[in-house]
Each structure stands twice: as structure tokens, then as C-alpha cells.
Image (cartoon, rainbow, N blue to C red):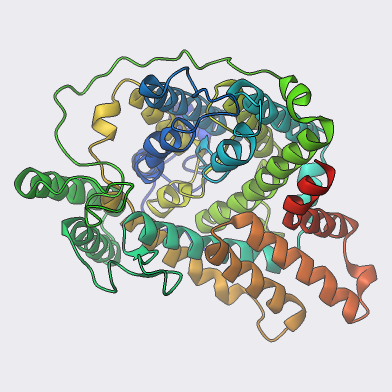
Length: 491
């Protein structure tokens, strides 16, 4: 478990301090604000990426989300920022935990490419499925089932989940910066840069940003991550103004361009948001289009991924913040899960896909965030982004992702908490750790760890010591892994 970075904290003063327990958790208002802003910059890419995933894909009837392709992206961007802002504030106020919420990356791809494109399915039908999934998760939370499953997971596996997520978000950082890519030749799964070499100005921005982040962190400079993001962004703006690098193009041209945002000072810092997508969902329309069994499988697919992704994120962020108890549980677990389940349904109701807790929140924790005030700050930043999207677009992923790499290192250090000589726990831990980055899925890694843990306990004659909920979770993960064939068989 990580120990919070030392920084003098003032004596308890004022309702803000008492409400969020800022001093009690060894933090300061300044640190919470910095952490909240760092988390926002680390995950603000979703405002750009979510519209590109669900705003550019036609549904089963050939229609685009929001009506037409020309306006869809802008509408999705505005709604994405709005829902993320509201739910992140809710997480901070009601759960007092430094986790921010936004449209789930991966979950949105499932909605776009596995649900919305089904024959006769509309975007409203697809978002209705998301709402149903959120409602079911909410029921599981209120009945105590989701929390009970979380607490049934052995401490060693919780530690492995945190370490695996650390590697996962470091991998995300390298991929989003273009340092790790799929080679054009497909000779290997991934490669360094382009053709095994670092090429282009954007990669230089990332490398210099990472080195600055490391130096500032080692020297214990307050606001290290935020300073590095701002400095790298300024450098990127200067480079783009001089070199005219331009963005990467989907057809593969200009491969050494900017990955997501192209850094440039906008003509106007303000843009009026369009919230027309809010409320455009059909709760049960999908049943008429694809049948009840298929809908059940689709809901189950979303539910299982959302169910365990959040659990893993809670452990990872709580561990990095030093907020877990002896059993590896964060404070106010149920409140965290309630807000997260509401966010899932809210994402569907807002037509932006299921919203979930973001592992990038660990970047804010790395900056010193320890309370829900950081989440409130992140949420306010998202709400402002609905109007200030041109400013958000200034920060390229190459400038924000060095923070993810450093946080990955910090979370990786927890690997010493696993007893590697005890193969009954170390082998499942290993599978959980490596499969998260290798499959680009927190859920896939957790599932491998859960299943291996149960199988090993049975093999060594200790089946009776396995918690019943671990058995149930392992069985659900088996179904999750074969959900594709199940959809074919029962479709």
C-alpha cells in the first residue's frame, strides 16, 4: 500500500475541510485542487475520443447518433462532458473519494460496434440497454451484493489488480502518445514508435514531458504532474505553430502527427454546447428488434465489465492514496458503488454510453489528491469544458500521458505486497497483472485471476476455503469469456 507524499497540512479549519476530511486524510485544499485538475487533463481525452467512437458509427438503421454525421460529434462531446461533470461532482460529494467518472472507454466501443449496429437497432435502443444495465447494477449495490463480492476477493488478488492496472495505464500512456504502436507490417503485435524508432515532433513532446515529470517528481516539486502537462502543452503549441505537424489521419498518412488533439491557440475559448442528445433512449425498444435472449446477453456483457472494472479501479486508486483498510477495502465502499451505478444509467440516458470510474484518477492521487474535493474539481472542469471545449482541445495526448506513465510506476511498486513464494496466490496474481495490459482490459485480467484462484484451490484440496461469492464470480467470468459464442447460439 502506498504512503501519501508528505506535505504539511494546516489545522482543521472551516466547513470544507470538515466535510471532505481534508486534514484528517493528510491533505490540503491546494493539493486537492491540483490533483483534481491533473485527473481532468489525464482523462479529458474522452471528450474527444468518445464522439469519435460513438458519434461516427451508423446504427442498424443507418442513422447517426444525434441525427446526422455532421453534428453528431459536437453533440456527443457536449453531452460527454456534461454527464462526466455531474457524476464526478456526485462522487466527490456523496462518496468523498478521489475518483472521477466519465464515459467508459471500451464500454463505448461495445455499445457502438456490438449493440448499435445490430440489424434494425437504433441508437435510442442501444442506449436503453445501457440504462437497463445501470439500473441492474444499482439494484445489486443497494442489496449489498456488489459490495459483498468486492469484500470476498482475497487481499493478494486486490493487490495484483492494483499492480495490473498500473501497468495497464502506463501502457495506455505509451499508446496514446504514439510511443507504442501496431506496426504497419503487422510483423509484431506492437513496436516502438514508427518502424522501431522515435519519429516526429509529438513523440519529442512526450519524451521531454516524461523526463520533466520524472525530474520534478524526484525533486518533490509540488504540482509536478500539472506543471509538466502545462509545460509540455506550451511546447507543443510552439512546435505546431512553427512546424505545422498536423494530426494523424485514419488512413495511416501523417503517422508522425498528433494522436488526438492538435495543439493550437483557438480563435475563441468559448463554444455554445448542444445538449439535444439528453434523454434520447428507448428502454425496451431493443427487445422488439433483436429478441429478449440477445438483449439479456448484451446487458450481461456490459454489466460484468462495468461491475468488476469499478471494483478494480477502487482498489487501485485507494491503494495509491493510502486509503484502504487491512482487508484492502476503501472507505464508504457502498457510496462509491451507488454513485458509479447511477453514472452507468446516466450515461445511457445522456446518450453517451455507460459512465464509470476512471483509473486515470490515479494521476490525481499521484499529485496528492486524497478526498472527494479532487473529484469535485475534476467535475467542475468537465462542466466548464462543455463551454470551453476549444481550450480542452489545446492539450494533446502527448502532453498529458507522461502523468499516466509515472502513476503506472507508482502503482507497480505495490507488487512487493504479493507473496510470490505462495503459488496458490502468486500465480493467479501474475495472470491478473499481465493480462490487463496484454488484453487492454481490466475485466479480462481480473477474470483470469479469479478463475485461476478457484481452480488452484480446488486442485490442492482447499475448495472449502473459497468464498461462495468467489465461486460465483469465477463462473460469471467464464460466461463473460465465451459471451460471443453464447450470442451466436442463443441469437
